[in-house]
Image (cartoon, rainbow, N blue to C red; front, side):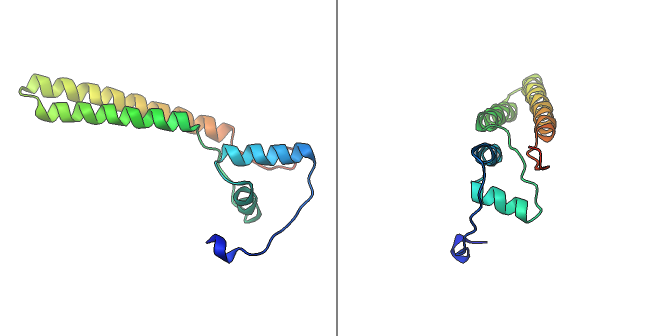
Length: 117
């Protein structure tokens, strides 16, 4: 939904601690406080996301994998092609394992509102 259609405001009172908690949870999800609260109100559970540094690191790994794959295509021998493919596969496996660990870690620390947070 576009912001242009959102022309009504809702004001709520919170304690300083509640405000900090809401802002911290919204930041973990990379959402504005408004969007975070809107999702909660619509019975959606905002998900905490991995830090941007992790995302950038994974993107760099993907670039390295692409370079190995290109080197495999340009290799002049079967041994050369196999060498580059083997290491591209190893790096890809490490990337998959890292993503799985991040997913588990984020799932364990997901932002949830249970009334006691």
